[in-house]
Length: 499
Image (cartoon, rainbow, N blue to C red; front, side, top):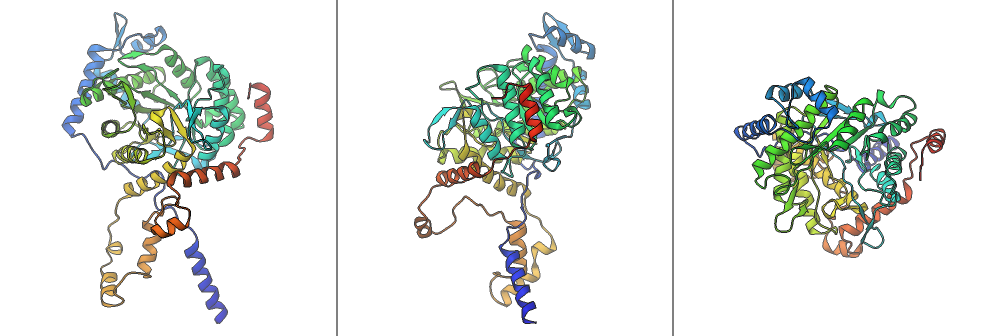
């Protein structure tokens, strides 16, 4: 009997010492924050329809003009005009839900509906160096390092290349080596951009090798494309890339990235109307090329500081506008993509924390399906930081916990438990309900310091930047994945200029 009691006690101790199941995984439900009223939503949408029907878009490539005319657009004076019926037909026939495949099926996520996922984006040309704490040009090695670092982070649901390898000047080599860094170092869904349309087909051949068959049958890479140049015109090179991606079954994120007071109105309502019109134009274009092709409706309102003209990635305006954008996209039933955590801070400091927390929480509460730029970005998207990836991952856990909300039931209300505690021990410590809630309802940070000041001082008085730097170094020292077999890697290297 004694040995059985000891064994039972040891089992309980082991169970309590083991980390609890994640109480707030990615994919929590958003939509609690609705900055626009129903009438305001309608007014913005109606204005966007008027812009498409009466102002139209300029600089229409010839091939696209033919396809748009075929589905009902009107061409006049070099501009394409979209009747309301055409826009609404494109919305009706758009892909509403679809998977973003990981090469590891367990890492596949579904886009659309109410689920919220934080991920990455950006094209930072500088990296915050782990050793010097200063910025330097980003390199191909940085891209490999960022990719394998985020591979360990639970709350990066997909990985878009976050920096540009400035040491690879040739555009074909840049596109090839960027894609190679992604497939070598992670099995999550990934994303990149293509400089030229002619680069798409060769890279798909490389993806076929990594897939061990047909990449198109289960595409695990999506493309970031900006086919609309604000205000209200097409970009021919990006349109050509879109045609190639559709031909190879590559899901696309069509990104509108207008800037307030520069390429879009300074008024928030006018900005939202124009930006919505431009993103709807991307949707109509996809509809004309390949109806129902998977497209993230990536309407990213960006802000400039009107005093200087500099891009401002953090602040109340960008928080509310991206939240409003998510609300509009969700109202239309389209898979929403917005941007957050684009802090203007250069260091991991108070400004960094305030701007990231404010914008990421607003985007999550508004129900952005895919929240881009949300991990690792600093310095108004000019920089990427290893420490920031670590810190942002923990921030997203707290946001997911916020989205999860409060579950109210007879069990969680616990009338009998309250009575027992009040009439018995006088506290709730150690009760079965408390233990259950501890594992089910609470997220416990691994970086944030909750110790007493004396204990903090005894442990070296480290700030959060130093703690995140130590963790980033530990991951980079220990996590060296190679998700390509030796045979796949050899075949790729024989066919492509891998650096």
